[in-house]
Length: 429
Image (tube, rainbow, N blue to C red; front, side, top):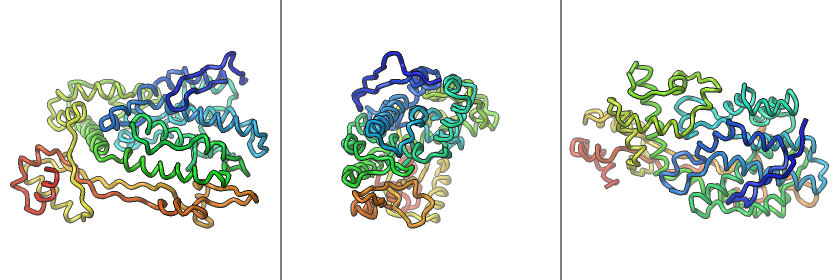
């Protein structure tokens, strides 16, 4: 049975000022080992190597998402909106709090290398033999499954999913504000108070009162700027590339029977691709970085070099090019190989793309991914139909090609490379 907390708990937060916990279940979920593990997972992965302040955790972000969701629901309940299903309050708050529970260390890099999905792991943790599951079971035997269905977007009421996952959800609003604060940039400073005041529950969807359109435009512009100035920063991309190559090389060596000087559980299970929930929950950034530090002393020169680069911030340099074709890429790889380099580990092409906002297409089954405006006549329109600004930033934004490489290795063999390829890499000098 759901009970209110005896005395409201308050977290002091640099972004939201205060985070209020008013339910015993929420307080106990926060204090589970599974949720506390998020203190040891950085929110922005390797961005701390570019923006030194970006040391904030998934823990603080998850609390922030919970707080924004709590504020929205409180506003709906105070205003007495009949379209908000009051009985879904606790479910929505639990899903908001736990939405990132399955993130692994250096989240997206480890997901890409080991073909994992943090949402799948979130659901496995919620449904598994965990303290989180035990607490959720106290509400109702099928409550953990309901929370998981909100996370995997299959819950029967779209309005609940909307608050946790949508183009204008509590998750995005918190990470824009929080990431901007900790990286020291101004792009993510959205007017969240104005946005929250303009949100309305309407026919099983969250909509925005049309007079709040300009605050939403600001929000979308902030997201656009944050992606290109922070999330896709070329130095951060360099550190992510090295991180992925470390995981790739370690996995390759493991399956090749290499005898590691240092190997701790649960890394073998990760390399085998079948960690249990218990093993997965032991993975955090402290364990991974300890492994990397030890691997700087491994006999395998590739792994040792990559780990040293990551741990001591000796990142790959990069050159920008407007365009490149497969024939040129193949020529570069061949030239590297002939010069005694390893093109698999000494060369990478990055081509970042982003979808700032997916404009409305009539009859699209993806209408739950749109931001809807509600006018004074209770007509609902998709925001890009009304806003010139949103239309102008919609569609896929593609960056330039970035060629990453270990500069000192390339400079040593530059004179042996074909002239046109050598000229390409001289841009970094």
